Length: 578
Ligand SMILES: Nc1ncnc2c1ncn2[C@@H]1O[C@H](COP(=O)(O)OP(=O)(O)OP(=O)(O)O)[C@@H](O)[C@H]1O
Image (cartoon, rainbow, N blue to C red):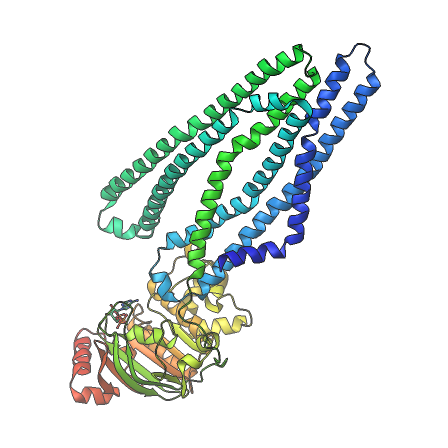
């Protein structure tokens, strides 16, 4: 998938790449004409009674060469480097699109920090490889080949061979140290990952750390990680610092050899002084591309490693997708579960076991049960966050797997246990960045969920920023905001997953009252630990270890005197039921 992403990108920008590389070729090649013209000018000046006009012509050529090289370099840099940025943006969007397609199970098995690293570090490494590093390689190859050609063809083959004889050693040395640098660099990167993971985890869990007075021990662990990272960096510097010095030494040997052997050839009249100057110019021209080889190899190694990592991620297939003949319609509100059994991956204990029930359109189902009894699992199966075999969940008589995912989820509304607040305005948090809702719709949804008063007390009302950059909400306020978010969409089936646990009994009553009045003809599934949250439902099921232990209306269940009755009396004594 990923190589085709690269190919698709290159194909879509074929023309600009061809133009960019043409300018780059022109710049690199024309640059190598400069030492030759300089040499000719020196030869002209050396002769007695030289013609100033002839020298001026050479000067003109030199200025023209410099101007063309400047222009071509400016153009190719703009085209190729800009294409690198476009590639980065293209892959990042592909990756993000892919992330959005992946099923929740994928995200629970990966670290957030790792996924962020894909989107930032790896994509940036790929950009460096297929942008600047590729350009530098091409540029360097053209400069080196044409410089060596001119040294060989227009100065002296024997001098070229002699002077460049240290080059293979320099290149071998660079490749050898490059590998060492690469290994040590990988250790630095791993240490960096460990440090940033720790920082991220500690910042997210700062309240737990403080509450359990863990600051000192966390600091000690962090210091150890930080020292390891420092040591890894020092080890890297030992190799990387020696490399440029060794390369410079190698080139110094080349220049000294040119001075010795080239100088002798000038004295013997085998080459002109202008040739000697031109030769020096070519030698200077190839220094920079050859010095860059090590860096380019490192960039390529990193880029290819990152491309491999991205490939692995992009190859992960979303577990939950539309069937080929999926129907693009929203459910209308009737639900039936037939012998629904569900195991989480890797678990041999069913989270739900042979659940059968019917929820007619417009009815309300209450689900109560102890923690871990399977309540939230049932809610997440309705959203197809996990796959269920055909025939076990039916919506309006149609198997849930036959629905296209988007309309299915658009027809459902959920208020999950853990409410997520985006770093955005209150209004955007309610409409979820969708157009098409009026201010009145937003205010109405907020009023129904009993949050309007709190919002209006905020400095900027519905425009108040929430989350990291803005106001922090209490647990109960967050829950009510999430209820407004679900209500505004007027879903055919509304699922409140313990969504009133953080509000007081009076507010809970008010919200349930609003629901009864505004959701006539629509279905609701109320999941709660508290009897008060579900007692008015048309049918209540009591879940116990994934099975339906009891079912009926509130009155029927009380009469039964079973588990529901026990929960009710327990909560009555604790004052949780009015
Ligand atoms: N993603 C998951 N992977 C594996 N097991 C899970 C996962 N989510 C829940 N479980 C397990 O499935 C069982 C049912 O969990 P579920 O969250 O549905 O319970 P619950 O009734 O909603 O609990 P609570 O009232 O505490 O929210 C539990 O044993 C739980 O450990």
